[in-house]
Length: 545
Image 1 (tube, helix red, strand yellow):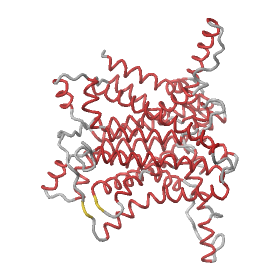
Image 2 (spheres, helix red, strand yellow):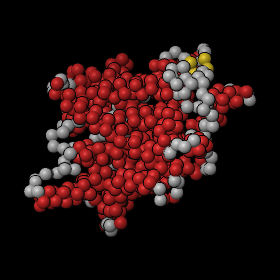
Image 3 (cartoon, helix red, strand yellow):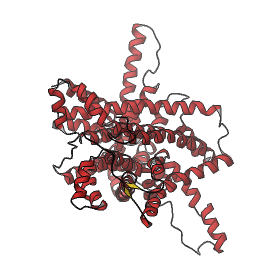
Image 4 (cartoon, helix red, strand yellow):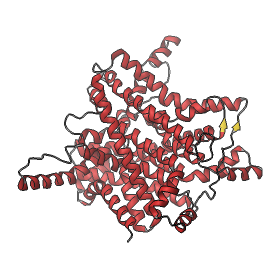
């Protein structure tokens, strides 16, 4: 067994430990509670979760893939602006956009009040689509989650070889046929990875669906574990939730078959772009602008209005610790997740086997497990380790060291790595699969080691995807709430925790200040990421290479 295999299995075991700890409860008998759930709420959980996954899946694919193709391959007014603006909804937490739109669209909200004033309507005179519904949840989650697909798909389109596209054009294929028969197959691993991330985030969603009073597996797990105190039954619900994720991944693998897509040329030139004219250019502007307006601009303006009228009274220097805590945790988690993802992906490439592939897949399942459940799965083993360390230092040195692991930021970063490793792994693995194995063989014949090949050959090719993976983890950690609340050290507050504490006290307007700060902190890395992705393409006019 090679050193890469041993290292990869060790990483996978450590990352999988909290999930395995939780799933161990699945085999504990709980017939009474499980039978009660199966006959009462389980069918509703299944129907709502399946409907949510199907609706959001269609929404993120249409928005993410369509906008990625437009900004990479077409020229129209505002194209360079939309390149980074389409990423902005990533900075908006789902629970925040749910609060903002509910306040805006409800019966007493400004929109319906304006309509009644303009037309003289009263209650019962008109129909208005309910935002707190399954359809409303699908629409809002699609607006927030489509950047997962957009980001990875855009990176894949930017990495495409001009030679392949030119061959398609010489065969008489227009832009649409190039898109459907060449670009989509080449970008399929990235599209599938982005869709899997969006759907796993949908399965894990708690704040928005609970606010909309939708019973899904996630709300059921929280209610069963923390409300009823039935950990075994909650873990069994989590096991069923994981089956959804496994089914999604299995369907994609089966549909792909044995097809593999590689770039066989290292000769890159500037991608050709199609000049859109007439109505098409304005349709492109509308197609790219609508997701940005509805997914970011309007919610941000609503938060700004609430913050200015009745915001958090502690705004000012008191907010700096919240920002520092959030940014430092997000940075540490992003660097760690990308590093681990590279090691795992490259380890599978060097030593593929059913054992290594299964280990990596299990380690990436944490993204589908609710953050609070992961937190409990971390508290059990780390709590035991803290007890052993306390006894050791107390007995040998007489030191009262307290809680070294569960009382520090170590547990928080560990939880983020478990929770968001799949985010970075899917992005890195999708990019790595497009590097033909002949490049590895050529590098090794020139005397490069496996590590040298990774550093000198693969890393430059994957630079855009690595940056994309890092920013995804950074923004996700900025918004993470349940695990942070449970595992944070005493008197350690992040922006997400501050927003939650105020919102849970029914002070939504005051919580808007922290929510707006989360959005603003996430804007800068999103813009830098978009610029770095454009510069990372070999042969581009903006590239230094």
